[in-house]
Length: 99
Image (cartoon, rainbow, N blue to C red):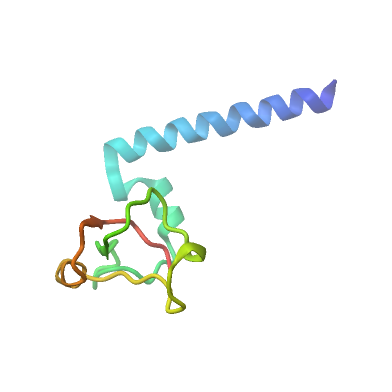
């Protein structure tokens, strides 16, 4: 019985942290402490160390990036707005990448 209680408490704490993280994201965006912790070692930053907005130009429609589904062996590429547009993009996605 103690194990179940500990698991329930752990789950409850996880949900509380998740809800707090969502709230902070809505309020603070990339200044949220949760985002900063997740993004902290990223190389995709501007000269000030802030998240750099990059785009992925594609004609494909998808919800999530999955390198395994890439049609080529050169991987998935991101770049500036002009670079994404030059790839004849139907859809541009500005994700936050932690690379």
